[in-house]
Length: 301
Image (cartoon, rainbow, N blue to C red):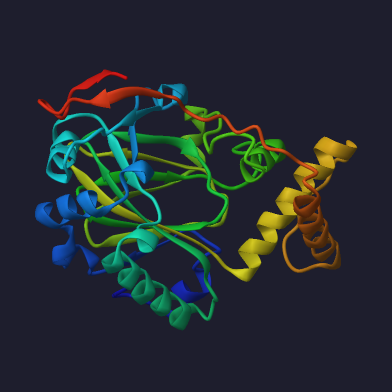
């Protein structure tokens, strides 16, 4: 599936910003007809429907909507004619063909890199021309596969000032959504890539990033996963967050399976079991619905 694995790319995968070529975009499962079928088969209550403003700093313009009873064909038309972002999370758990795809992709990744992958989540993203995803970071590792359309991707270092320790902990602790404040001047420190069909990019765990579509429909796959090392890092961040909030500590984030990090792993597991931290995650209300008559039109919820 990946056309240009090298020893260097295999070593860099999950640790550095690295791009690949793939042949996934040539598969018929991403035609209009098959995408509409996938939208019809996907559980409607799991479907994420979003819209957003144009200013990359104004992340609070990210709004959740409802697809109602629109068919898959109508939803695809809404993405073609409106300004929406359709997010089908965990398609590998809901759609057999995407489950098979996930097995194929991750088997190849494990063979090429020697990494064991856990907690796999293959998300199908169908989004409008010029739509964007604001500056944010993810807890797991991510690889982004471009299937149709063109998008610009900026990836920033997972360190200060691009993300503060308290902000990273808030995301892992689920105190907040993944968005964090952005300053356009940071673009000078970003690694930027123009993703076209047949390209894939991955980056270090927790690296902030943002995305802007070109003037056409975009179809991508966001593949999130953990490795044992990534899972350790996530638990260390969780432990740091609890230690900071419950005990007033000023913990540092260190890399690797050190004695201190293994102790934090044990503490994180105990903290979760004892429910030492209760997240107060901001949940976006449903503020609009798609119009069945003109699917690209947004109506008040």
